[in-house]
Image 1 (cartoon, rainbow, N blue to C red):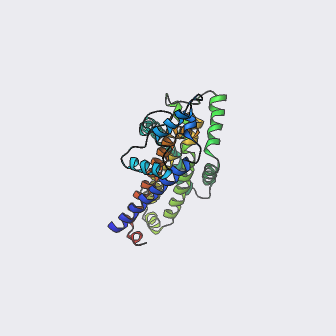
Image 2: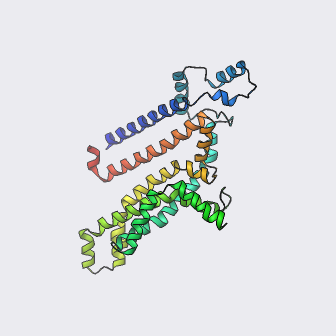
Image 3: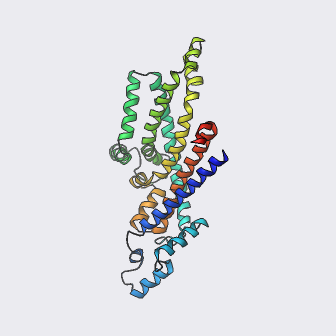
Length: 305
């Protein structure tokens, strides 16, 4: 088990290092940030001074070496546009994205899991058809399209909900539903599939033979054993929600990390883009690492693959 854990941890760190290399060099292919930072009246001496101040006058491999050594110390550099530490901008926006992701996950669990379970219970019926159609639409329709439709209907036409900002609970409804739309559909399909597998097992048939009521067959025996893959996927989907807010936050003008990334990309703010992508990727990598370790603990066969 220790050998397996060490192997997976090593792979995780190699993956993160590879991401840092790709992100660093790709962001440096987008143009000269000094041209953006300097005023139009800047002289060549001014441009050279800015390059020296931010280290842009050094070879690219030297810049990367300084960058990665700073990351190890928790220093992601200084924002070019904000003129403050990039990590400070991250922590300023992170709570807003976390709140949106939690609300989105709540929507997905509140609607997706019950629909999937009841579809399995009523397999072949009208509700099952509705559940499968809902799951298919949820995974086929783009989130930004759903968000635009919600804005047109509930904000422009009915004027029930605000279009942007995060001042009250009403501001959370449309962004949270839109962001959780795909996850809701995915959990519906997974819950239905897991329940159908469990309902066809021998111990469920035995429970019915013993006279256990259908309610307790579904809730105590079936759902309890079908919940493991749902819980696992929910954990991974939550991290995916945290990483997938860029378009939704832009559509709803939500002041979170996704919008910060968009602003930084258009502003060629290299340190902020690199920091956000690297931290978001690290969240996902370590979430997968934790899931792999838990699976290996529960199923010893995985350790020897």
